Image 1 (tube, rainbow, N blue to C red):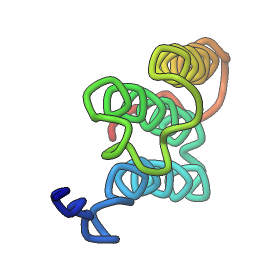
Image 2: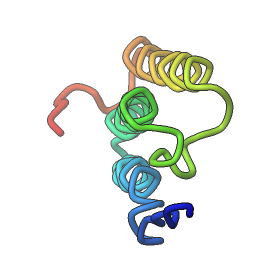
Image 3: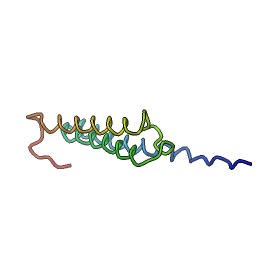
Image 4: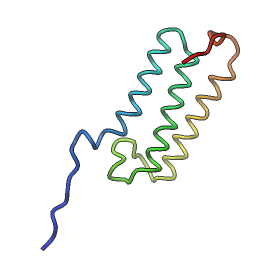
Length: 101
């Protein structure tokens, strides 16, 4: 006799993606409010969050942040996050005179 497969609640299955999406939404709000550098850094932080969640969670728990293999996902998310933050911090000019999140 086999044991029944325990299914996760549908909301919990999408929680990692919702967390990343919430940080991205906060970044987009900052961009719309003309704090483009802070918003871009927040989007980079969201990508680092996705990398961390993908590294820590199993394939079943990762939900919609699972794309390829664990290593490829972590390297891709972290690489894009680093690029976003590097570009945001190195562009001269713009509203970074008073940088407070």
